Length: 241
Image 1 (tube, rainbow, N blue to C red):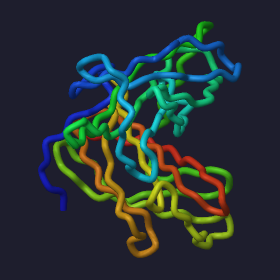
Image 2: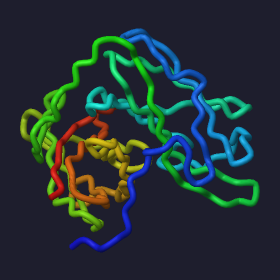
Image 3: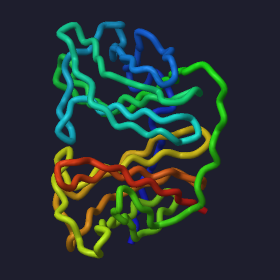
């Protein structure tokens, strides 16, 4: 049973909660390896250098094209001056959205968890792909991933994911980022970024998350899970009426 909770999508602005995402450069050549460099600046335009470690990392960077294809989950490293950097390839032309998901530590010890978003551009002919139809199961590298649970506007509900190997057995899931899976949910249209809270342990052999959706729409779910030392991403489309 879901519980009512005020839900607000993140990643819609480059500046929020007193912090600003400032990329060094936002243009890439499609298909060519590059590097994304950026700073998080505070209200005095100072580069922030203190971050809390959340889900095993101080910074989570999500990159996806505006048609919700090409999902990447990256972990930049920070230099002493507060400049973050990470290798990044935008495989196809188009406008891509980069989300910086972090918890900043202020001088007085206050913690501010927020997600900032900025557009990156790979010039060229952009042919957007239609979002796949809604489904609660999908396959990736021979594994079948499926989930149970129904997202509802304004409610926090559990989503339970199970992974099955090609031979029908349940593979040994490994910890990834402090839990047994990591889930990113993006809203079609404005590309709002939803915060999802994982259960730290498996629930009856399944990966469980708590999801709050702010309103109706079509959403894309990206589940990162680890087996055999390799992280894979299963993607789903969900409609919230």
